[in-house]
Image 1 (cartoon, helix red, strand yellow):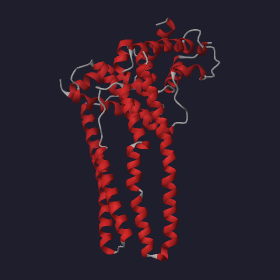
Image 2 (cartoon, one colour):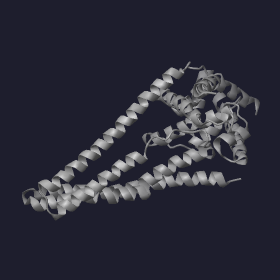
Image 3 (cartoon, one colour):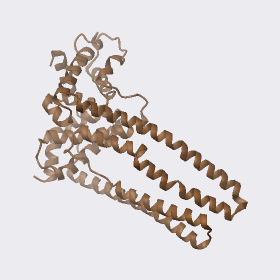
Image 4 (cartoon, one colour):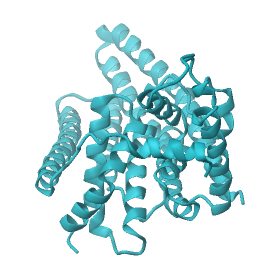
Length: 172
Length: 188
């Protein structure tokens, strides 16, 4: 399969997920678009060396997250807020909205904001979890041991349920 | 997955797509433009190094004393080193063969070495002495500008010396992140 054909297939299948990924790495609209373009260019370029040793999904997510992680490392100095681990999440404010119910857009904005505070590795785990990737898939993409992924997912589930689920802090 | 999380996952996946699309023609065009810009930037870097080398070689024929000659030679070596660095730091495309953990570690190691590893010390040792020795030689040949040269030399030394702790502090920060990744790899 040619590089162009592989790219077309990948963009067709994962295009929307890549947009969500870029959105969770970059809040600024223009920078987000630049990051998304960089991701697409990197994916096309990477297919030159794609030998099919892993699935298309694993390959595309690896390239996309690697580009996004480099983006975070490069632009890290410009940010004032430190990135945190999942273990520190309890110390973060959940957001001060006291409305009875938040609409989807607000919840989504808050979820994105929450994800953007995490360090790149944990951000990747939570994003893959939200994209419906199972623990084995996450381990293959990230390189974190399956046991460690399972621990992180357990923690993520707890945090998401507490912050965004029914009866969670945001829905009161 | 709890029901609550199912809602969150559904909410996440139902996000409206911005309809971003890049055709392969657009990709080819953008990559060509990007490669052209990269080539241009590298050539500009080579040009600056070449001008520096030409200037200091020329200076050795125009006017020189022992210190200026040594300073010129050291600066020529430094410019050559910068050109070599430009060649070494050529763009490396991201690949799907490496996991995020490996990629992130590579990025952090690169940043750490830039700020505190052999690369940093090589830069300091190669780039700093040339201009200093040359300035000393110039001041010796032109005592009338001694005060200005002294001021410039002291400023240069102060900046160079203050760059050391700042860079080492940044290198330590990157090392802490690398250690965190190592811990993550070793767990379980």
